[in-house]
Amino acid sequence: MTFESAATYLLAIFLFAITPGPGVFALIATGVNAGFRRCLPMAVGMMISDVLYLLLVTFGLATIAEHWGEFFGVIRILGALYLFYLGWKLWRAPVQNAEVSSPGKSGGNLAGVAQGVLISASNPKVILFYIAFLPTFVDLERLGGSSLALLVVLTVAGLMAGLCLVAAGAARARRALRSPRAQRRLNRGAGSLMIGAGALLIAKS
Image 1: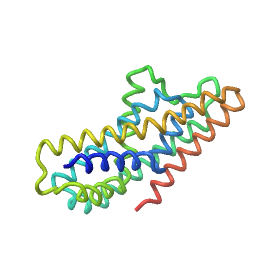
Image 2 (image 1 turned 180 degrees about the vertical axis):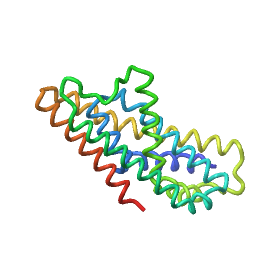
Image 3 (image 1 turned 45 degrees about the vertical axis):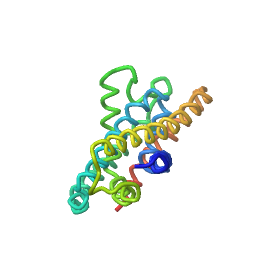
Image 4 (image 1 turned 90 degrees about the horizontal axis):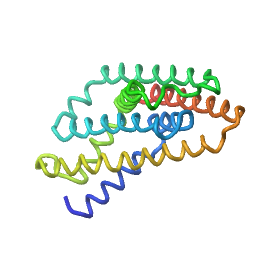
């Protein structure tokens, strides 16, 4: 993998990370509702799921994954229902206790990672992206250990940079609006984003 290919791959992964979709909408909703720190576990979970999909493709299991339609369908429905639940919870959240879970607690962090994994894993477009995208940069049949390690590092860096940028923007909007009325609108807007992300997952095939 040449330097130019690596740089282009990193840029493409970054753009993929900030492209609007269920994961980005859920991240924005979390950032608006609970701030930047609460977004980090979710971003890590989304990154873990993407890296697993990357490994799935590089080890030649993409064909099998493509035929797991029913399995991915169930996961997608579960992910959408979870997003609906979070959206409903955000919509009804009182202003004085707006966070879904405390970012300082390990349970909240683990729940955030699990949420990110579920959201990304339930989106079949993620693995389809890697199936179509990776062969343009590397020969998967001749991929060595060092090249695979580089791909993983670039994927982690590009995804986390993009997702953290999205989270920071959402958290900044939250800090700018601190009145109870504005917080209530932010909660309901975040809830609507969560519900919209769930609906988008349902609509994806």
